[in-house]
Length: 168
Image (cartoon, rainbow, N blue to C red; front, side):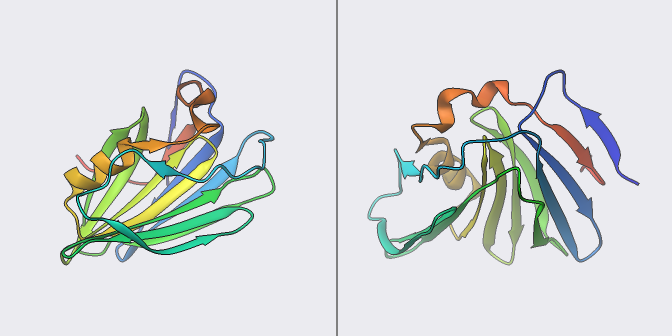
């Protein structure tokens, strides 16, 4: 059964993480009404030579892929609203899962067979993606993310987080 870890102050999004042998399921529940305007991500840093190869903008989501001659970096940004009960499943069987703080919030990095993925809730967004860049390079890219609306109160929006498992 999951154990509750309750932060000292209110968060915008509740994250429930359930770990089973083959995969990890993340569920997100928005705890209050949020502005449902998508402010798509921009990057202050990308590795040398990275160019957009694919981009898709929708009402509540943004997808972008960058490539250079050796690497790629994909990001999907999904606006979480109080109408959602969103879930996200990640293949974590035989994978390395690490936690890092990015812009004051926890992000999970999943490494498996030379590929790195990430799952990150920042403000009102679920941000996920994959890359063959190193985790360190991915963190540098994600740390450089810029939003007009997101920075307004991100450090004050702390969530109640439920974990089924945490690495030692």
